Picture 1 (cartoon, one colour):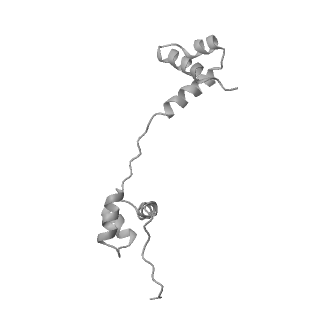
Picture 2 (picture 1 turned 45 degrees about the horizontal axis):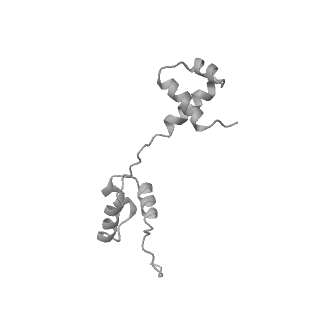
Length: 103
C-alpha cells in the first residue's frame, strides 16, 4: 500500500520538529522502518550537482587545434584518463579520423 505524499510529509515534518520516530509511528499507525525509509528517501532526493572535468567547449577547441592527437595526449592536457577522454569525445559525437587506405 502506498501512502499519500502529504501523509509522508506530515511524518517527516513531525520528525523535523523533534519528535521521536517510535512515537510518530505509533501515532500514525505505520511501522518504524517505513518512517526511516521515508527519511532516507527524502534526503537522497536533494539536488547534488554533477560536475564534469572536461569542458565540452574547450574539448571542441582542442580537437580543432590538434586534429591528429591521440586520446592519451588530449587526456594529459585535460588532466584526466584516456577512458574519460574517450567518453567525452563520444558525448560530443567526435570520433577520430579514419582513412579508407591502409597505411
